[in-house]
Length: 550
Ligand code: C2E
Ligand code: MG
Ligand code: MG
View 1 (cartoon, rainbow, N blue to C red):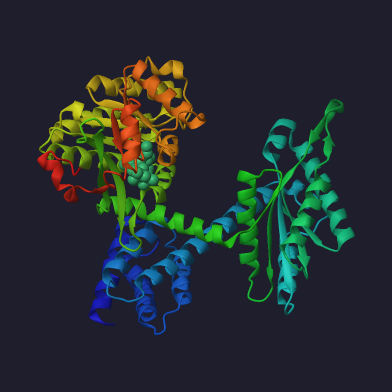
View 2 (cartoon, protein in one colour; view 1 turned 60 degrees about the vertical axis):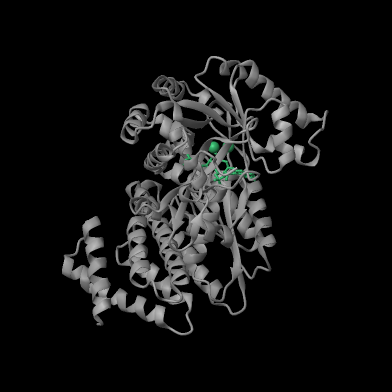
């Protein structure tokens, strides 16, 4: 092996063994990764480049036990560093991540199914509960259907809604009875329409259709299955229990389709249906699955990206409308991603909120922003967005005090932007009070788009209302509109702010007319492309001179 490939394998082994407990020794891991390293090298050098081998490498990593998103993140980072000069690196990494993620999802589905089977085996009396064929029979039918040349197949996966509740509240015997009833109704439908019905275990059923002509035919069958199942079920004392199910639907040509992939696709669609359209069907959408895989990969990369300092803060001036000079700046995070380039927060903030990474990420943003504000020569304030998850963590006020001390920024020069929804939560309100006691300013961001009781605002430790951009869009067409619902809403919010003695800021100002009109209507500060887009700290050189680039 070439020395640089050996160096890569050594670095990879170190990264993997340092961060995971594997069953293998370090030298065994090295042996394993050596083979992978060769494949990676060969795939990156292949001319022309094709993504399939890269996808396979991703999937094989899962099979080899390197199956966590974290290991994937570390691996892609390392490949990115060692093969930085390779022409097809971004496409290669994209395909590797897709392969890994898809295999991981398949593995999770298989593991869940294994758990379900074990559950059923434990309760032997419940096995063979229905007369329908089982999963093995379905797979064998599926293989036959897929092998017929030029044929298409359709699959509906059904899962009884709220089955656990039925079991828990009415007892296993009633639960079994419900499953038997569902099986009976599905079996009858399948016999009448020539489809193949199976009981996959617990509360999961399938309907297989061979020789379909398109998805519509399968969704029609899903509707029929739902109608067949959706009858009430008699329970004790003359009561009737409504039963329903959610369905995942997939339909595709048999050629090139693998039974596990088809089942996996139907499982995903079923998951979506359970989450979003309970009691109805959803069709597998490959674009959505790819998007979810990409988002999954992105959230897997975030912890390392944070350690490597890839999250940077941009600043956008908050301008005093009367004087036309900057009063402060909003700190807006960006991800300088090694493969995808500069990512806006819309791509990753919700992921960070979902995984909890928003807490350390928010802290990093606060630290950078306060240090930056302390370095500006003009005494401008910096306005930092705070997520609900940060407010819910105990210790936020102490952390902010520590950062202010560390950076020597006076508290009045820090403003925290929270959404009005936090006002509904007494715990977060308590934290806001503590923060206000430190002396930092608090702004209600995107005001008017959330839910809050106006009556509450007067008692709150809030200093600023930040009016969301959507409320001023109409001013672009007609800055002097004197009537209309938009104008009424805008002036009501401004008046509310003035009456409560709050400072009023407007975001999304894009034209000079909007700026002028908002000053006349009584707003204090504004922010928007009219004065400048968010920029890296180094680009806002005028800030340090106190001119603020306007
Ligand atoms: P936001 O706090 O309401 O920030 C204002 C957004 O409007 C920014 O988008 C800004 O670039 C954009 N904007 C500014 N002027 C104009 C304009 O004239 N026209 C239009 N169309 N847009 C304008 P950005 O930077 O993409 O940030 C989006 C959102 O991400 C922010 O909305 C905020 O909710 C969130 N966010 C950004 N940084 C952080 C952070 O550090 N922590 C948390 N928790 N959220 C953040
Ligand atoms: Mg904001
Ligand atoms: Mg906003």
